[in-house]
Length: 263
Image 1 (cartoon, one colour):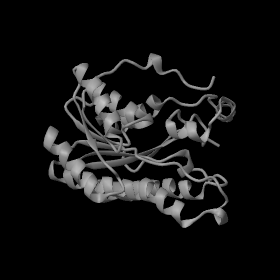
Image 2 (cartoon, helix red, strand yellow):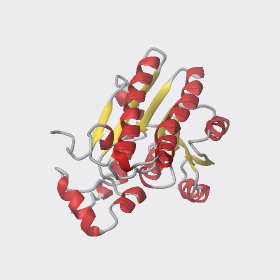
Image 3 (cartoon, helix red, strand yellow):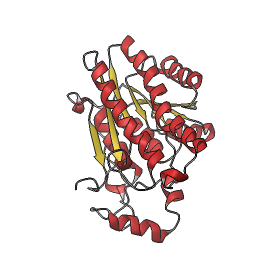
């Protein structure tokens, strides 16, 4: 099979009840799945993304279901935009308890000597600088209210090398390192910082990369578990790390890759 069917994963337990969670890259894929899941788990969720119409529509659906959510336009490469989005979250819901920094862009699949500086800047601005700016303002807020939890989205490309993946891989390896260092910076100040490393996951980015069903089937065949993950699979990994179930976990890389990095 190509995609995992998440239909059986519908039961929720209120694991984020009363917490305010900020999610970047919330307009599609893993980010959208996370917003929907966190809201069902009782969180007050702030969905942040550049595509404001899409997140407004999603928030409207969640509110119709009696769930707590709000939308805010945010460009993670712009510090002013990030600061304003975090301020909005606090103004709207009173405090910030957790964050899922999921915004990212895909790489350019070429050998290193064929890459150019323009692509470097675009990819690093979003994937690494964007995570830095998000954490900077999230942590500043959490320090004022006694702590919280942050989860970043890296990639299997951030723990395993691959040919032609220098720029994207570098940002995702860098994010793992930034996460580990930040975890140690704040371990005694009540803030946990962890990172998930997704393998191939159904999303707009993945479908642009694997543009045909044949390509997607080929990728699924390469995975030990023999399918492409659903975004909800990654959202649930982030959920665990944001909850008190992971209260003794910080600086950890949770590989969510169907066993691809096991060898």
